Image 1 (cartoon, rainbow, N blue to C red):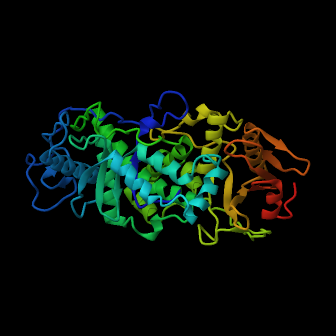
Image 2 (cartoon, helix red, strand yellow; image 1 turned 180 degrees about the horizontal axis):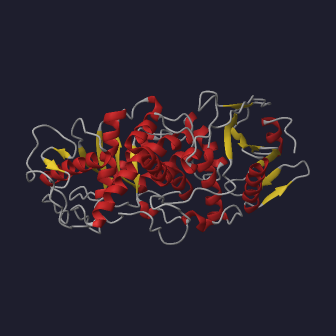
Image 3 (tube, rainbow, N blue to C red; image 1 turned 45 degrees about the vertical axis):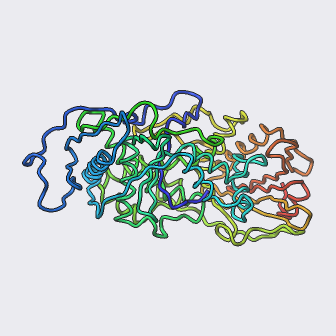
Length: 483
């Protein structure tokens, strides 16, 4: 997974991941309040002499607007809807828009087509490298490439997105002829535009070099936008603000085009939307929006920091490639050929395998054990907590008639106990896949989409995992690593 330069909001309804009702901890899911707006302390709704916070393009943040989405939005309704939305984002976030944000609608089919194009060819070097990342997480295997899994997941889940490179919001809808826009989606994406105008989301600091780096950065970027969205919907539900009703059916709801979401991918990329608002809210409560602005300028570096609201830095991991007999890394991909999966992705691995294969890793329903009104899902579990760092090196061997793949995954943990908990849960994944252990300590999954050989070695607070097509390949990829 890598950031695509799009800041998106996903369909929460698709995330009934624990096999039970969606949590009630996400306020404002149905923005349908039509209560009267209290009169502001000014002369009616007259235009100010100059642009001020809470006023945009002729509309105050608390000014009623004549917008009815029951038959879709016309151009004048969309203009008023967006202008007042911008004013409301300004009022909440206490930052001024520099310019009007263009908003257009596209069909879900068009979005899926464009999204698939962004992932590139399945045979590209990046995608072959990234396939090993998601296979190491037991999320995608031989039957599903990572590019298609990510594309299908986001294609069926996205409500809208803001593109920093285009300075434009696009709402994804199943009805472009009579489009509707959910209030929360509009506010969320308008806030991304506000962030871009003040912090420049195209800046290098908002592009992670690893999977965990992407999730960490999104923890503050998406967390900030999601918190503003939730503060907005709180006002709608309380009747403090008059809010445009969104029709129950049709509009920009999540269509099911394509093959649908991969829940392992979905849970992983949703983590910033879940833990991010809690992380940002703690900053806001302790230091106001100034503290949030500081975090936007200096984003977190690991998903662990967002999950646990900590400043703990990842522990450096040194690695030297010792592959033999044609096995080599992808030196031009990731960070010197490696990716860092991080605590959020590791948790998603354990949860996904517990749900799909019955692995004894985490309690599936613990996903809903949230502790904050702004938290959607719980990503904190014993086997993934205590993460200190990890580096995963995909390998390939092109010496034969067909290219073969494997990987070395080095994980570091805060304590030896944390390492044992990770190792135990990981071995339970292998067990759920029908693994057999050989005398030399190599584990072999004989069949299925994860059929491969594995060596798992724990030494103190480090757990190293080597994967290859056969036991002989495992020893060639990482010689000398004995159980």
